[in-house]
Length: 419
Image (tube, rainbow, N blue to C red; front, top):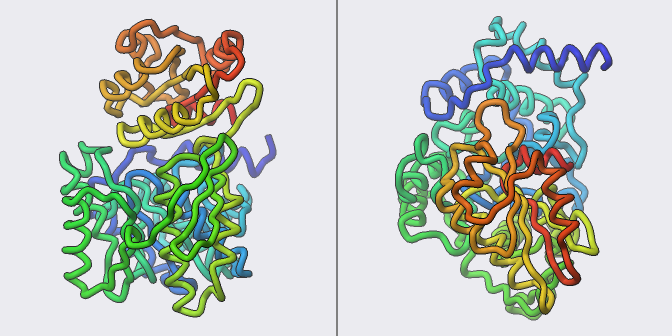
């Protein structure tokens, strides 16, 4: 390990690893820090994204479209698969440990604060926003980490747009017990002079909460459900669909829910055309046809087909299973290797696992939040306990027959072990 890698690892180890997204005072403190740092987010246009599922895909579509059009584009997305440095991307490349360490140490000195003053995620936000300014980013797609109101990313000044992907039940202990409460929390990223985008198929209670917050600031609202995108062909390699004007849209990322993410991205793209930022839809259509995020129904192998997916909550995981069921070749079975964190709704997840043809369960590599594979095995009848994800995948591949499809699913930490 190099000296800079050692220093980076040392600094991360010293950081507060807790999730502090339930405390509104944290956002105030971060806002004060950003003021002292000269409000780096004023140097570029911010598209702020919140939602339960679909943030990563929608953000990646938009970021790649802007890159295709020639802009320097930052994309902050969490959690990362692999190094935490991968959260902070500019033009497709992650911040280096050298740049992160230099900026972090300079920030602590400038703020005259110890490393214990902020959590790891809060420091990531402070470093990221400054790095984008220093690197000359023109647009930044900024994903909220958890919720909206009390998320560290909400310390920014009003963004150009607030984009809401599908909102469902997750992190209820922090965000609230109902979809309405969760949507109200996420809606707080709406600020004055911000255009609001709402993804298709929102629950009525979620949509009402978003519209109420938008009305508070007289913010214009664009509902992506008004954009028609009709699927014409599903396959294990891509989905094809057509817009109302007959334009062919190819989406590399699989799943009907990715068409909803594509519709949201297209709605943002049309708005960017109206703003004179994009000349036409071509940069976005190219992005939809090429973007593939790690761990989002990512093809990992063929013969048999192996897919990786980090859908880890009761909204995302059943959709992934349903998507692959619909794509199974004739006579094929769906074999699943799974592992989750303990703070998820494991009862619902286990019920979905029980519906597939064969299941291997294991424990993700998280030091404090992993659900033991043995405990998940008790909840899933006829499941097989594997020592780790590698052993589970090897066992599934050994049992796979022609036309079978294997899904490795659950926590980002589980998928990260393979990637």
